[in-house]
Image (cartoon, rainbow, N blue to C red; front, side, top):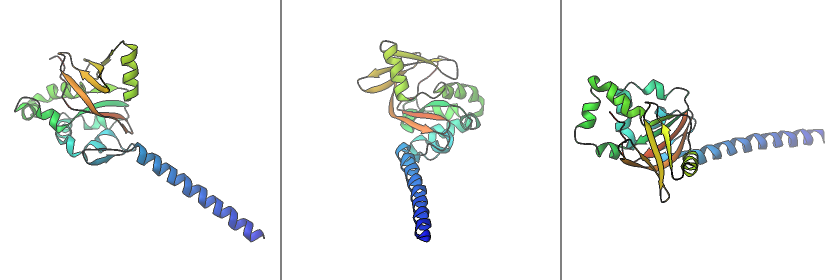
Length: 191
């Protein structure tokens, strides 16, 4: 009888450990989003995830050329509005090739940090600020410029200083050091 009780206790302990592990894996799978054909794991930092997205190869190359990798792998938290390759393709021909040249590093840094907010702002947080602001909310970016957020129907939209708009196509891609919101257009600071 004592052996049976020990076996029952051990079985219960194993079941609890296994159940906890399965629940943790399910939560991680639920929080993991697919971007550019790759899983974006909430346990990894912004750069470690972005390098796996086939839709963000231009952004990753630009971040490397601007020497911002170490910064975006830091503690943060950061909110990154991550333009896709197609977003960069909307820029005038030759713009990206010119920006990634070493002599244009400061300009590239200014553009990329215009896509970053200090802090962790979920889509819900941004929408709450928009509602509180009567339809618009303004956020100070890491480069010091201002981005305006608004809704267009059910879509979250950003506007730069010149009024150029970028739509969030995938929101709330959680990272260990912040959150990524995928955008369809590169926004530009006043330069």
